[in-house]
Image (cartoon, rainbow over all chains, first blue to last red; front, side):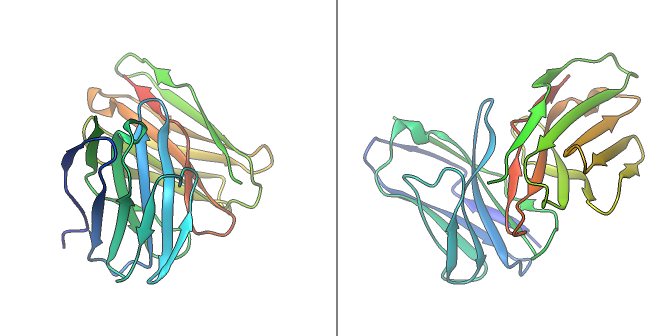
Length: 112
Length: 109
């Protein structure tokens, strides 16, 4: 089992460009999450999904969109990248209920 | 919504000493509190968790205590070793049980 796989691992964008980050999990988990991690700010929840076809806003959703068309995939989109979105992005998944989250290796995104 | 405060932000200890990291949460309906360890450049990994029906849980050198009345929980690491150096995050589950809210982390060295 690969667990949670994030694509790409690194990316550099110019301000205004768009891109999509892909998260794939092979554990048949219902819940999936996108976080951003900035120095001194911990892990902040961007969006999450409790099942195929459903998404919800987290703590810092502005500037991002998500889609969960398939249970195993959770996509994070930046429509018009801004330097403030430079960060490390982590995806995670978990079964329903109070269960540990499993994290991917992260995507390091720089926006110039 | 749920808010999690974590202290201290940095902690330095001598090898062999104990380390304690404390977190408070805002919503009394939260019932699940995991702790994650993140080494430099790596993903966060669960090290221990506790549910609200338990006051303390131990796993070798690591223990977590929960005080539901005061709405705080703590991570205790005994006999610290160099490989314990990392960033530690506490988290609390939202009352709906659908998401975790994380503290800002503690850098232990």
